[in-house]
Length: 373
Image 1 (spheres, helix red, strand yellow):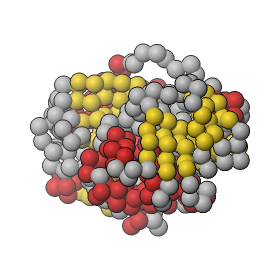
Image 2 (cartoon, one colour):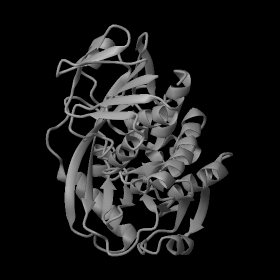
Image 3 (tube, rainbow, N blue to C red):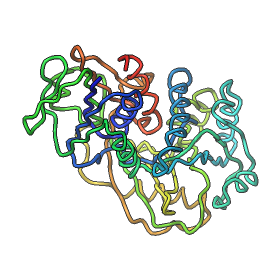
């Protein structure tokens, strides 16, 4: 079988991975020289802890298993089974964390409540002020800026994989081919469009009423911390954002403890992950209304800096990168991904939202199973 994949982000590249693993020939087409979108501009978190139950959690857990397996073969992914800590500072926040740790699926997620002393033993860099922490042992991390490139390098070793960069696909031809802006037609037994947040042009022509929206976020990365941050770190605002924490305790938190004004205005949570070079990736914001602003705003950076420093008990290293990114998210929050046949042998796969890095291996595996690869 010959598989044509449009898009070289992590979702597209994982589709290429599964196709090659199953013995097929793959041609992957990317409009940039290399992927430059949300697949690189993220935390690199394999984030099981906050996922909704049912299909979303099952997808995240399966992806966690696949990431570890692939990471053993491709060390440059930088896969690390580091877990995460969410420190809490008062009874309202603690109640949400404790409710999560008592969920029926708490063991599957690796949830456990830790005292402040136990949390500092797990992550000695968290020397700041907090009362307890929610531990999630199933969370992990990879290196987002290099993961797609590392996967591509391994795929090229197969001899059945071709990468075509700097080519924008402009048209679906017939039922099983695409034409790029060089005029070349690429025909396959299956064509999978993994275009990420690129939802205009060809995608709009194919699916005018696509139930997917674009979301913009801001993030930053520091110079090396000078010590190891042994886990990912989130703050209690993440409880408001992730569906796993819904319930009476969260309702009480929302009713009785307002977010700081900057966090509320920019729909913020703190997420913090250490990169292999020692720097910290920190964010993030959520902007849903179009048109998006063209500039980055300093107030959110100031907020996450304050929160991060309060947990670390020290000043952050110098910030060396600030950026904004855009990802595609299904408008139905219960859907993990939008997967749609748009021609007889052409499929569109998009909309995993902030779950793309976490869930891409299992999303691609499901596509491969459904298409009979």
